[in-house]
Image (cartoon, rainbow, N blue to C red; front, top):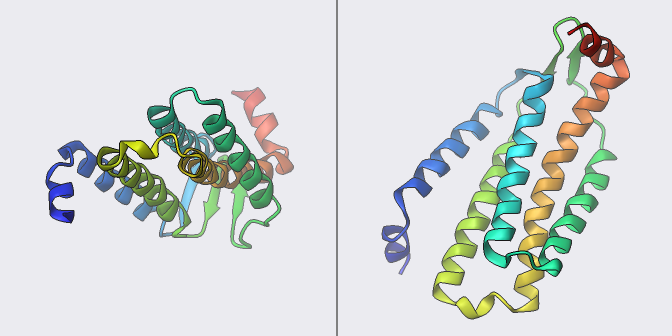
Amino acid sequence: MLMQILLHTPKWVFAVFVLLAWLGGRQLVANRLGLNRVLVMPVAMAGLSFYGVVSVFGDSAGALLGWAVAALLLVALVLRRPLPATTRYDAAVRQFEVAGTAVPLMLMMGIFFTKYVVGVSLAMHPELRPHAAFALGVPALYGAFSGIFAARAARLWRLAAASGAMVSGARAA
């Protein structure tokens, strides 16, 4: 049955997988990131996860609320965690020095595989859609991924803001 699922998967899905794996793989090594680049990934992943909720559940208030509550809860939890000690912000060039980590790769793959498994599950069992556990659990999972991404970016922006250079650099631009 797994082979049938894979054979009926559109080819573009595999391209998205490769792209996400490549983007996540790049995060495994230490890197320098600009302020705007820090924001792009969380916005893109939040958009993808929100699209995952809306594409399955439409404008269901319960599903959207589940996504939002999970996202906010994870933002609050992750914001409490300190940045790794090796994380630095260079105000002169407005860039962060960040250590390599597998977290973005795991989050991207989590969103991708959640969307894939939900799609396959609903194709095989459309009666799952109205079930409360499914209609709240899936959006909450998407929201959790979004919240972690957002909070990781917010911690970096908070580091830049604490340096005061982000504000003065924005005025100079």
